[in-house]
Length: 241
Ligand code: MN
Image (cartoon, rainbow, N blue to C red; front, side, top):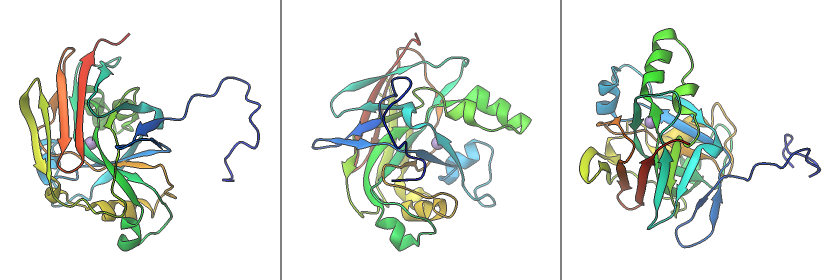
């Protein structure tokens, strides 16, 4: 038993259900943590005012219950979040880990890969700009409710996704276009790097960064994100309530 596990089930209040994502072909992938990589595509790093030649990518997290799981063939609902007027889409390849560890080599990291999904790193860009200007953490911009819509996980144990189109359309119009081959850090390099700071475990998800073309969404918009060889994610932006 992990040292932070509860030794009994006599809970004082009803515990929240464990977040989980459907698996292509059946079953559910239980989510433990969500790690995210920032600025992993050079063109997006530049559009956010960064310099990919001089900056290493860096990291943030989202709570596991921020996922909005969307099964194949369904359209999910993304409630326009509170306290913002500028919510942006960031389409990303998501890696689902079936194994973990610390201080992994790149080869060991590849063996932790259980599968892949298409995710949206939804971002309250106005609150992020304020956080950046004041030197504050990004949590309020990145870690809000429903901030991580995600498609079904496609099993691909040990497979390194290194190339393939990644894209996002809004109302049928292209907004983001990129290729996994343009990632600055590869999937195994990201996993290995993270394992130097955290004990990775089965059930962890890693959002691997977004290509250029991020922008705002509005209530009523229909989003479609896709990664070649992985799948697609359909989402409608609805009123918060
Ligand atoms: Mn992102």
